[in-house]
Length: 280
Image 1 (cartoon, rainbow, N blue to C red):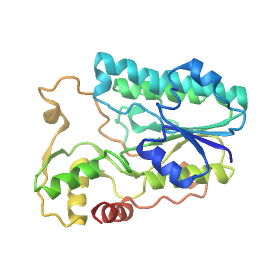
Image 2 (tube, one colour; image 1 turned 90 degrees about the vertical axis):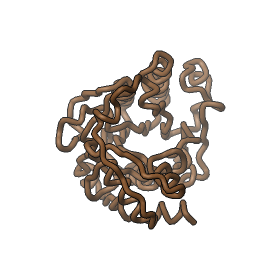
Image 3 (cartoon, one colour; image 1 turned 60 degrees about the horizontal axis):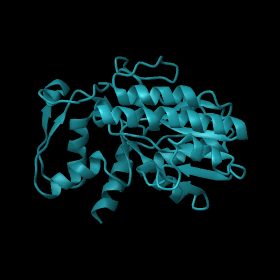
């Protein structure tokens, strides 16, 4: 497989480079995917798989006038450019999406659920999904609560725990985390198992929890005696400006991915491994 990783410096991009050390890779400094001239002039002749891990993920920042422009450029327009390149060069496009393309009113989200984003970020990602879907050879992976090597919720909670700070965390947003090595494992499975092209939900398996319960589990695994105070999304956002609306239920139905022969790992197993690595 001649693989090209885009967004190589992000959480998922780093995990993909570990999985595919021989792959070519780029980030914004080496290939600006928002500049269609740069993308068009790139030599795609030796690439047969694009792994697009690039995204503007500042959910609240996307609600600002400046962030809105960046979000649409990176999450939508750039994906359309990559999709066109993939069609022209018969390249398989693997694109990473998000639970934020849904409004969170369903108990679980299937791949067939109509798009219903609540935020600028969610809308820009939904537009990117539509663009990627025009590529004959495409895998769109919708995922949630991503945890890897970079800024993420687990690292934030561990930092608070190490300084003895008790956080207040929303208790009415429900979902499951996705560790980047699990997401990479799913990508590799799709690419090597002759799975049908299309949209797949990917997260870790296991109990659905709120962010507040997730925080409690993090402190328990890390052996920090830290209390977590519950709050509602409405109370957390009260009085704040440029706060994006978030889906209250991010639980993804994993049955389609399981049907390909992939068995997701329980997130609590991966959380234990992850925390052990972070505190080592």
